[in-house]
Image (tube, rainbow, N blue to C red; front, side):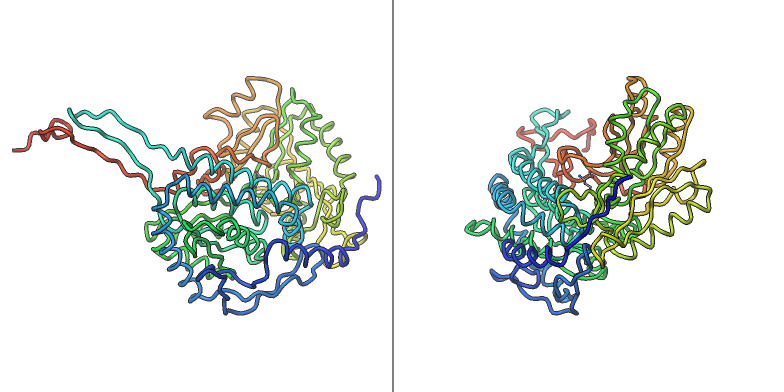
Amino acid sequence: MRQVERQGDSQEIMAMNIEETLRTLGITHPAGLWIDQQVRLCHGPILAIHSPVDGSLLAEIPQAVPEDADLAIAGAVAAFRRWRLVPAPVRGELVRRFGNILRENKQALAELVSIEAGKIRPEAQGEVQEMIDICDFATGLSRQLYGLTMATERPSHRMMEQWHPLGPVGIISAFNFPVAVWAWNAAIALVCGNSLIWKPSEKTPLCAMACQSLLMRAAHGMREVPEAICSVLIGSRALGELMAEDRRIPLVSATGSVAMGRAVGKAVANRLGRPLLELGGNNACIVTRSASLDLAVRAIAFSAVGTCGQRCTTLRRLFVHQSIADELITRLKIAYASLPIGNPLENGTLIGPLIDRTAMDRMMSALSEARHAGGTVFGGDQLTDRVPAGGCYVRPAIVEMSSHADIMFQETFAPILYVLRYSSLEQAIELQNCVSQGLASSIFTNDLREAELFMSASGSDCGIANVNIGPSGAEIGGAFGGEKDTGGGRESGSDSWKSYMRRATNTINFGSDLPLAQGIQFG
Ligand code: UN1
């Protein structure tokens, strides 16, 4: 096994990068209400932002207080009243320009994602690419917000549906995709004619401020774009609660933990608003006897350890047919042993830090619970040598289990891969589906019948069911989201846009009689 931890001269790299990055992205102001042609300062308590790379202090930002939130929401209502009247293809023009500005600033924004969220450079760039892709998608969509024309049972009548803008859209996003998940929501919501109020994770506010600043740059010179079309509310959970309860926000799209989603979903549903939830996953992969192990090993490694196990689509449970289990597990251990772990800003690193100490403590306590349940743990240790001091670096873990222990029902947001052997595919599918979450899943097989069974009504119960690729790393073109405790929401591609609009069914009588539906004679 070669030495894999990398020496991090992070202090220097960070100092070099952060100032220039912030300047390039236009973050010269400290907070996020876009009102009166400028960004208005919030006045709440100061939030200190530390980089997960080495714990260094990145910024001190005043948080939004309820009065700021009220101002942002009132601004978003006024912006919506104007923006909904702008033709959808012109709204698409804003998003097209935003996509181009993202192309120009891809490196800088990715750099900020690496510094603030700890992602390795290739993944941070991939995240910004995901933003660019959704902008392209939404721009095309701005000319395709189609409604149907339906056959009517009444003579000289026409029946059709129209999709209208909905209102201010609240977006609550998590630290692990600090820019892309907002962009899925924002790009679609904007072409649909809505304004935005964004509460980013308290761990990644600089990323949110950068996105807002780039969007303002895109809007510059477009007189159709009203001010306050996108406000950013930086601060604690209380701001999210406030958004969830506010009737002026008809749709609240929230990404994060199941506990957060339950609270937001309840509050939004209580006022009969629309919650759009993308919550935890406990994603699985089944590797059958007929699978290509070369493909499986590569896909499993990326899905289980990419983003240091902090994607909602991260592979957490692996079910391997008993006849190939020894070989697959051996190959996985070899792959894990050569993973370069360390400073995410250094070229060649594949595993960056966990977001903070709480995440590290949770990983360690999950591993100790797995050991108590009879699991054999490979890796999983905390690293202090040859990694930047002040960051939480870990070696990803493979945990061989003999049964589906209690700990496997939980989503631990860390690189832990539980492995179980199975004997029949039906049993493996049942094990996969036995958890409360239902986001992403995949099967490795070269047997058509196995693949089809996995994707059928009695197969995977997840929102994402892949064949011969891992469960993570979805493209934007599909609808993204999952079932059960994952919350049921769908964001991003396909027809997810319909959640961001209101549907009006119109029946028009162009005759001189008044026939009633269902043949009713009345008087
Ligand atoms: C998330 O972790 O919240 O499919 C989103 C993926 C990414 C998105 C993950 N495109 O892994």
